[in-house]
Length: 417
Ligand SMILES: [Zn+2]
View (cartoon, rainbow, N blue to C red):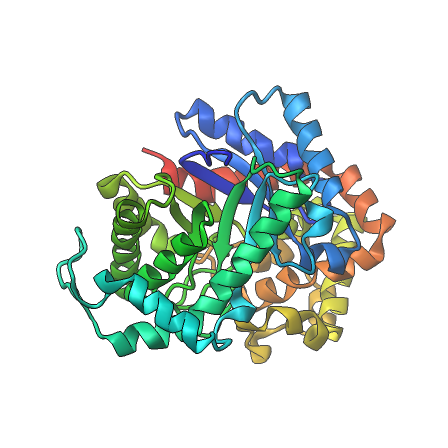
């Protein structure tokens, strides 16, 4: 097992053009005393949509690290993979996010559920978890219900884990995360405890776990939901994890992973407080926001680059249904609030930048346009060289957006003094 550093920060680089600008944010954070380790992540879905390979993410990250002289750790995340999609990630990756969301709810074998219940008498009755005021009260039926929902998923995770170890020549030299975030229902803290017991039974050395939290974690926009309820669940999850580490012998650094964690400004304060209080670690995954910063940079550059940004919007609007389909559980777009392509065609550079930049104090900010463009990176991929050349021609202005967004809006609010 490769030990996962305490604070890790996932960055996506859709077009493998921004690794330098991203790493500059980590370097600047380090100069401010913020010690966070970059994890470049790109899911199979995104590679498929763009037509790229995981090795390209590795090459871009390695080059940025070498060019900028980053001497700290950094990781490459095979994000949201399963048994069918993991193979091309095995060589370049040293962090694997085993996605079992699709397997949740698949009924487990009755005998296996019985065996699980027999193995875990400690889960039945009153369970006092340090840090949670109200003890859990779980019946045999509760365990049966939760096991029926999650046992199969943990078995699938083990199959993926074993496959990676075998493919790496019998060596476990990577970080293992299990993700359950892209599901309909959040997992409650008692469910989390049962899931962790099942993961420990499987012998998976899990170091980060991504539950689905209460509320909406839509791509590229702020958290939507009950912040007090989120704070309670987040704190309870931390307590459950600490309890599971000591009870089930899971890796001591096991921590929460917050997916689609970029732009969730309203929950950063509760997260920060919880980490300070407990001393827990955190993995936060940003949600491809980098690509939006690229578009903002192009819009700000004006001229041909602004025209390109307008074309991307027009095409994204035209292909909206197809672009949104793979992201249905993680976007909420109000069509009525989307400007027409003709209207955007008339926009100045300032208007485009103001609409897309995530500044909730600016009345011109448009969260619906932002979400549509977020899932619209396929359009840029289809533009091929035209998009890449525009990025290249406007490297400085785009780079500043990428670095500034990570550092000022994310790293400092979450991890700063
Ligand atoms: Zn996720």
